Length: 279
Image 1: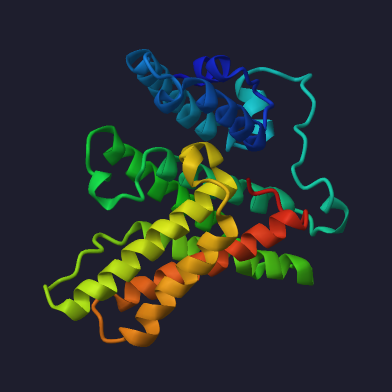
Image 2: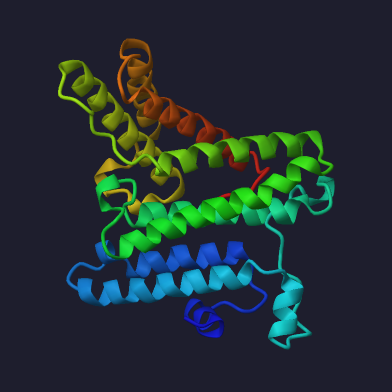
């Protein structure tokens, strides 16, 4: 889909921000998602395909610097886009806010695609449309990480160093998590099967925690409202493997999942403190 058409479909302009894109996209998903349009599945599926194509095209365009967009579209009178970090802009190092915000929007977009298409279920990652969406998620995570890397060598405040460390840590473990190719035990011993059951349950709980905090519409209504309980259960399941099944083949995956949970909760703390705008 072409840039102008994608902006028209989403109701955005050339000076919209990535934050604007995410906000609009979430609203439209609630309107068109097949799960929310019982009896109109075929129509809603077509609408979601168009919406996702528009999102990808618009995301690629709005990721460019504003000046470049203005020149290419011959627009000279549009105002500068709003910043998502208005509460902290005055104390931030020049250049840090915009780069950091853009990187987080790439990560958010990657996670949104990942959970919208059910890619947390490994078996679905190579089926039809999901294959391209899975590849798209990986590319966006890489792009977000590439944007953050140069910041490590630039002047930063102490608060920015902390935020960067937390963001990079989360990206690292989310990237490792989405590359786990199988959670099935390599053999059929009772020991491995028990470890596998703990890992499967812990993984499902972590995905449920992330979705309930960031993408509540992707969580079945009857599963909502158990956030605190799910966090504790997920941690307990993974600790069981690390402590009681330390020789299990899935130990490494368990450690990745546990670090994913902790690093995600660190990001949530920054969000709730108003220090970042992530979701």
